[in-house]
Image (cartoon, rainbow, N blue to C red; front, side, top):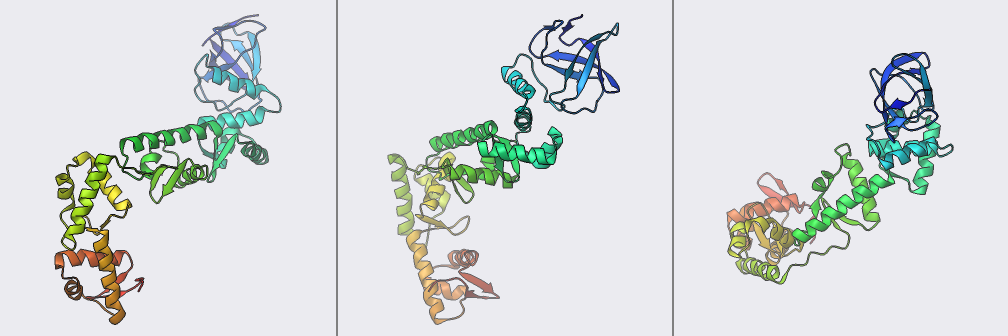
Amino acid sequence: PRSVKNLAPVHLYLGTARVVARLLLLDREELLPGEKGFAQCRLESPLATERRDRFIIRSYSPVTTIGGGIIVDPFPGRHRRFRQPVLQQLTELEQGLKEDRAFVLKKLDELKLSNFSRLEKATRLSVSCLESILKEMELSGQVIKIGESFTGYNTYRQWERLITSELERFHKEHPLFSGISRARLKSLLPSSISSKEFDTFLDKLGQQQRVLVRGDLVSRFNFIARPSPGDRDKLEQIAGIYRQAGWVPPAFQETLAAAGIESSRQDEFESFLLSSGELVKISEELYFHRDTYREAVEALGRHFRSSPTLTLAKFRDITGSSRKIIQPLLEHFDRQKYTKRVGDYRVAVNLKS
């Protein structure tokens, strides 16, 4: 009888095939005669195999039989030695009735997220067997279905912690933002996740009251933007300037700077003013106070109650404003589907009277 040391070269025989391999012993430095242990076979050339296939090991030189074994994972990730989670997974793969379930879960842990077809190829299980296992593990909570793909519970919780931790950090650093963009959160997870799958993942977190999704923005479920006393004073100052300016609003960036808001926080203040409804963004350069905007919509409604069409010049006269203000305002109304431009005229579309 001969022992086998870690990374010793051997001949591996499987069926009629033979290939030179090195045995990476995962739980010891040397496998003594009569012992058994887990090893990863580093092959010099590819070898077709299936789970549960039996093989024979012979020494490299002279060629004498050392022992044999069973394939528990024909498509493993690259394992590192003496890692208890790896050894635990491999131990579970050995067990009788739990073997296939443990194997599927191990593959999902490696793949992170997989559709049925990819998982079928990775496990080499029959379609009916894999369907039964996934259904059983989904019911027990070991597997989570995201869209048409599957992930293990541990991976799902890891992603959940990544998302919620990022939201906690973001809300702490930017208390006036109502949320963070989907794209920014998606970048935290593996690139293999499609946008549709990520949206489904967010929906699940929303159902569990972990996050709140509003359009493109995502926040902690119970998050409410609460300005500090200092920020509140600045917000009221800006709103007051726009309320007083009426139909001749000032330049937005200049107003923020005059209120003492540093450039790094201007987007945050803009987000709060718009999401709270205090200001309405008409174009990239034009913002209205909500009172002025309401006056504009009411004036639009009054006009269309007595006339089927509207020109820019007419609305300029109605409001007493300038072309510089009225042109982007009417274009904004078009985007809101309040009006529709037909040549030089506009007609009402979804404008409530």
